[in-house]
Length: 471
Image (cartoon, rainbow, N blue to C red; front, side, top):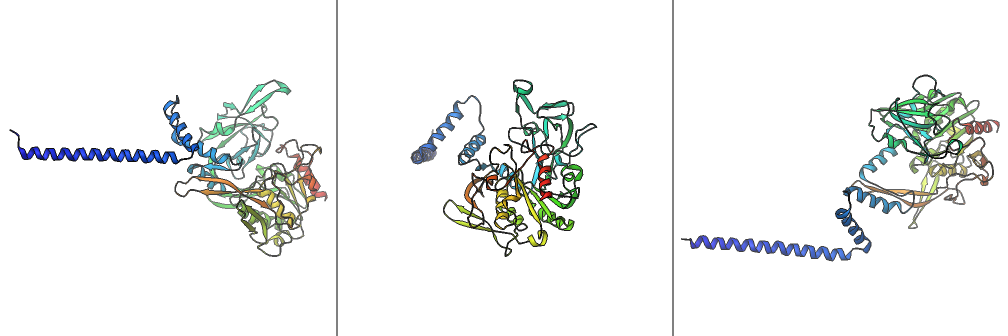
């Protein structure tokens, strides 16, 4: 026999379960109805993107990682603006921030686009200090601009070519070049890569030297100073810096002599202002009367660093807060950037200053040249520009007169870099050299002796120094 009270309780529980189920279904219906209404309010392009994502997830023959998909979408959304704008994931932005501080990880080599020719062995990097293994190398320094990495591997006996024959042979051969970074992707800090290096050819495999380089985390230096047959950088070890003689790792010291000193500024990042100041002090101590500032292949960098270095190179500055650049933003707002001091008379009074530049001299480098022209530190006749045409057309610098600003998403750590302003010199004409550059048509001097923008040996520099000495 069934207890009536117990039966009533069961019926009550059943009703509660039923109403709970109805409530869940009602909530789900409201949710989906709300989502449908929200979906219809989205722009048609966003709905198309969500539809594409759904089809990829359900129909594509391989699994596509969600993060990779959305990173590609976001990157495309920003990169379509111009070639300078970019999207960074949180991890990528961490690398960008470290790099702007001069902190890098790897070997420290960069290459000219589409080539295995070294554009730079970063000062104070493992590549900068690397030396050829064994006897018979064609040079007695470290790795330098203009050398070719024709192969790399985990040992001297296991070298993979960094070039491939596409067609033809001999003088008509056409090669493609794989980036060394691809070969290094399997290496970690502390591991050693063996590079096959040629000084004469991008595809030489026999007359080469083997150069072992151990990957490391390092602080990059951006300024090299040379005079009286010696060369120096401000080198960093465990964060501490020292003025270090690096003559054994470079060949430029052998080219600079007499009353001339030489400063190479590779980029406007990290501690470059401090390093330039130390080079200026060395110049003063050496009592030189001529300075060649080498900005070849310097693609620029931070406005802040440009402001700091400009403070040393403004001959007619009337104060320690003179304008060095004006930025005009897309919304019409204007901003004037000031020098970080006035040190010209202290270090360079009575000096004759010259500048070397080429088609890869860009952005902050061009802005610094604009500062020197605007304050009568130099004239156009003091600027040497690499001429690969043999005088058949005007040689020029890159012509980047626009500025990028990076915006970080504080919640996610991601960031976007966008072009936000045009850059104008502090001269009376408020010159903007975007897409024009600084040219030999303006009165700059076309150079002789260059075959590329990174020859080894650097015969162009020898020619420029001879002109400076004879001036």
